[in-house]
Image 1: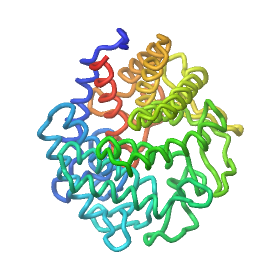
Image 2: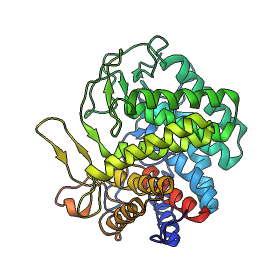
Image 3: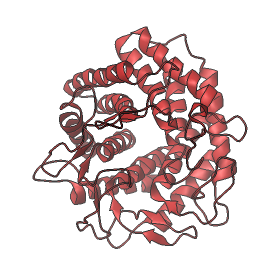
Image 4: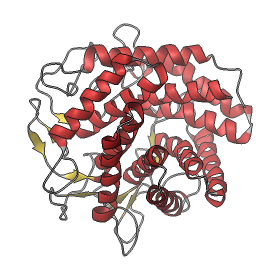
Length: 397
C-alpha cells in the first residue's frame, strides 16, 4: 500500500544532502571519529568530548546510507568509524564500551550505560551488513550477550540502566540530567529492542531470535500495556511507575519500531500483539500531539508545566515514519495525511537551507534554538533513518 501524498525523490534528495553534510563537516580527519560538536553555522567546537552515542549513531547511519545510496564515500566513512569505535571506546578488561572520550580520544567517562551499549550493537550489526564483516557481526552478538549477562534483572525482568566500568552498581544511573534517576527506563528498553531487531536481521540465529522475542515481550508488558496509548517512562527496580508524563516522540517512534521488531521475528502471536499496540500508540499521538501546523508536540508533563509544544527535530522525523506505518497497517488515509503534514512542516521549519542538516528546534520556536547542529545527542540517526524508511516504504509499495 502506497500513499500518493509523497514524492520518493524528495526523500532520496534529502538523504543525499544529510549524507553529504556529515561527510563534509562532521568527520574528524585529524583525530578520528566525528567532531564532538558542530554549531548551527557549521563551526566546529574542537575541544568537545566525543560521545559513544554520537559515534554509534554515525556508524549506523553511514552503514545504512551506503547500502541505500551506494555511496563509496559513506562506506569508507563507516569503515573508519567502526575502527575508531573499536579502538578507542572498547574496554578490553571488563567488556563493553565506555561512555565518552576527550576531544583527543582519551577516555573521559568510563561508565557502562546500557542505552549506549545498545546503540553500539545496532551500529555493529548495520556495519556487518554494509561491509559483509564477520568480525563486526561477532562483536554485535557478543555485546548483546554481555548486555543480557550484566544488565538483565533475572529476578524481576528488565534491564538495569547503568553501571560502573566493571559492571558494579552505581547510585546515579541517569542517562542525562533531564531524566529521573530511575533504574529501569523506557528509553533504554526501546533502544535495546531496536538493537535486537537489527542484530536478528543481520545474524538470523536462534540466540538472536530469543533475544529479540524477550525484548518484544518486556516492552509490550511493561512499557505499553499499563497505559495502552502512551509509554510508561520510568520505573523502580520492582516496577513501580515513577512518572506520569507523556513523551509523544517516543510514543510514535515505538509504534513503528515495535512493528519492525515483530516483523523481523516473524512470530504470528507477537505480530498480532505488535499491530494492535502500534496502532494504539499512533492513534494517541494523532489525537493528542498533532498541532494546527502539522507538527507533533514534544511532550506533556503531568504537573503544572503541562504541554511542551516546541518542535524538536527527532519527534518530527519519527512521526513521518510512525504515521506512515500506521497508514500501512490500517489503510486509513488520515495517518498518511498526518505524515505528509509533518514532512511539510519539517521542510519549511527544520531543514537548514543555508548551512545544511536539520536544526534542533524549528524556525517557529525562535528565538529559542538548540545547543548545536550536531553533537553528543544529535547525530544523523533520526532524520537519516526517516529518509531511508520512507524510501524503502514508497519504493516497495
